[in-house]
Amino acid sequence: MARAPSVRHRCPVTQAPGWYPDPWRVASWRWWDGVVWTPHVAGPPPGSGSAARAPRLPNWLSGWVTGFGVVAVLIVVVTAIVAPLSIPLGLIPFAIVLPTLNWLDRVEPEPRASRVHAVLWGATVSAVVAIVINTIVALALGDVVAAVVSAPVVEEATKGLGVLWAVRRNDVDGVMDGIVYAGWVALGFALVENFSYFANAGAEGSLLAVFVLRGLLTPFAHPLFTAWTGLAVGLAVSRGRNPWTWSLWGLALAVASHAAWNGSLTAADTQAGPIILLVAMVGFVVLFVTAATMVVLARQTERRQFTERVPFLAARYGLSPAEVGPFLAWSTLLRTRRSLPRGARRSFDEMHRALARLACLHGRPGVPTQAEEAVLFEQLQHARRGSVRP
Image 1 (cartoon, one colour):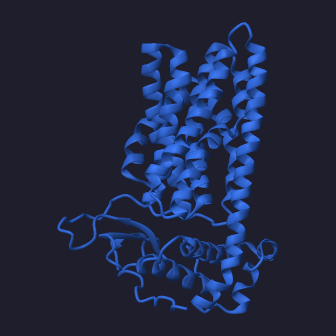
Image 2 (cartoon, rainbow, N blue to C red):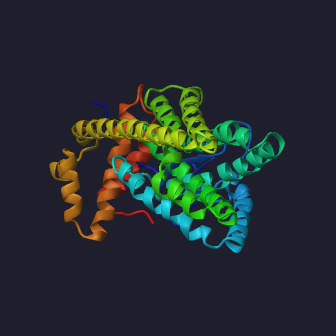
């Protein structure tokens, strides 16, 4: 068995989080989070002939999120002034979906900065583009075309770009990561969209009905639609394929399911509306069960693969039986974590995150690059010492 990489690259001159020259020279800059180097890089490799200035934004932001965020904030502020009740109502479905995404993320916990960026992408880039294009289509071609054609295509495409951006940030390691990041992006998008829907419904006198349908009965709609794109992207990463081309079949399923749902709601306004709405709700339940089953099976598979690879990781990285013991079985992992005080849980989660990312890295086809393994190995070493990210 090959030896683990040595950790030769310590912290930069200052320990403050920020962008610093990449010690592995994979790119011009790499994000230092105050404790360890991260997979987030920016700029071309040194010596490529094109110099790159250090990014000015922290790693939980990007230029796209910042630019569209200005417009998104204006939309939310205006909505809060015109229809203040829509803001707290919009937060309710957000609070319903959030624990489910946290549960899915337990197999390989993602860094907080990456989760925040995904939510912000959905709430800014996806939401603003969708609002602008769907409004133009509605004015030009009518509400039906906007709801059944424009909305599914534009919304799923922009949310899918958020998942692909997570791949670009080196955040996606496997199937569950793709699904989870799809959920985070969709959660941010649905939050802003619900603000708008509830404000319009309040003006039309149908706020209660719209809130019950969107906020209580179908809060998982957007995460379920986008999960197909996340599944495709995650499969591509885990199999060493091109995530952009693989995302197309996932996007097609996401658009189709989204269009079918919007179409059924649009048809509910016709004479046969009650029957169509009943069929649509049954169809949504079937979609929910199908997607939920897919997600649970993917989670169980990745959970099993993680525990199976722990002995290999222990041998490769010189971990003691006491260190890896809690991770050899999922039930033991959960029981150990529950028994720890809050402060110790954070260190335990860092150890779990480092092992999980290394397990995914070694589960992918091909040989990991030195930089990929060294970054994760350094995170593992800091987790072993009890260091916690800020």
